[in-house]
Image 1 (spheres, rainbow, N blue to C red):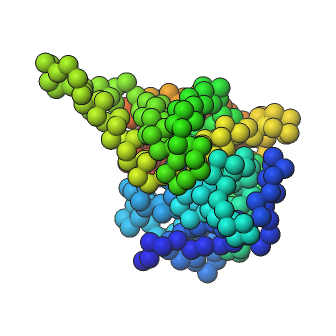
Image 2: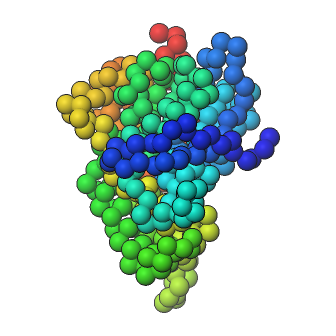
Image 3: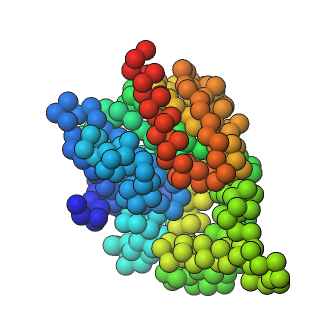
Length: 344
């Protein structure tokens, strides 16, 4: 199976919620497995902030051979979001008419813009019913927004570690990271490597919101009682920053963190409750006990207002990253959810 994504160009310019226009939009996407003759086995995955369209790469244990979502049984679709740097149109993409990339001038994208592109790709693929729509974090924000917009399209909705509106707390975390990037003078140079040092710092900051006190205590406590510098936790932060810089860019990070901040399903819809009550999919909402970025109260609110939703909470030391790491627990919850859904 090729790891190269398919590429789809939208047939027309994309007018964004802000009023700006992207004249050309390419979407990189992967599909796994085959459609059944009844076309009733589609699983659509919405990815989080720095992920790509290759789901088995970042959600192993949940997607792949022998996993709950096995391509032998399901037709799995994942599209790289606009604004990212894994094949879809983003800040480093060269405009064919000007020969230039936008860099920091890339326009504001909202979650609704990301969903508009998913919808265009769905129409291109002629998928008229989606068995399961699933996403966590920014991916969950896309999933809940899409389910509000198209209630008849989705049979099942799985939301992990996400919310109906990005919180002031989450926006503050994102702004702190953007300030770190903007403080790097190379960000203003509009070059592919611009803002790398700032991105490294931003990732180190973000990681504190993705994990938990207990996770750091267990894995990063300094074993040398005599150490006075270069602690294990310090090295870990630098390592994680370097890893992201090697595969991402500061301009996409700024763009997509702003996208996350825009998330508010109640905007223009008489509030969050009225918006969530539009959803008709059978819904499972999963929270994580140690998640400080998207605390369980946010998932409980989703479950409260989505009609008939099932709420489950995972006990995990991994914080927000638990939605990527606790695949055994997630599999158990999915099994229970689908059994209850289709038996009753």
